[in-house]
Image (cartoon, rainbow, N blue to C red; front, side, top):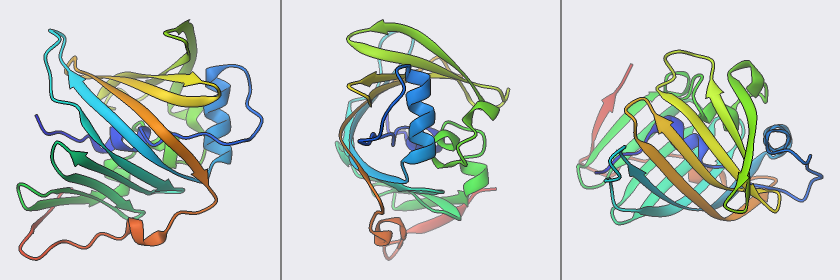
Length: 208
């Protein structure tokens, strides 16, 4: 099953810095949103349904720069790319030779991606609550205030002041687990990473 969710892709690009963090996971997230302007890293993700069956694990790289630019690139077991240049979000499937394009507001909106790319007022769009420590991680839960967000909640686990795991429950009862490694906050990321150039022969589909 080959899926990349625009909103999820944005949320999964969390990183950490050498700043002074608050003790609670929710305050650590707020500090990240307000103080980290760019980051790169790697991810592994897998989606399962409520019966426990699901897709093969996907691995790849990410980069982001506030506000509104990100790159979420699956390298294995197939190639797929979600990229935002700040105006449009592109999803490119190499096997299908197809690109879909939609405006950033439509693709991100009040979604989990707004936590990463927004102005930092995350409490306007999400209810944040601390969760009990589990599996050696500090946890928080973000519940969208919008009824049409398309997901129920996302849990974020921190270890040594870094977000290292995310678990998102969508509206279909599927859970996507993402493990983050090599998180490297930066002052800026190469702007060429956020320029999309469609390969020759690729169909472009514009979504509302």
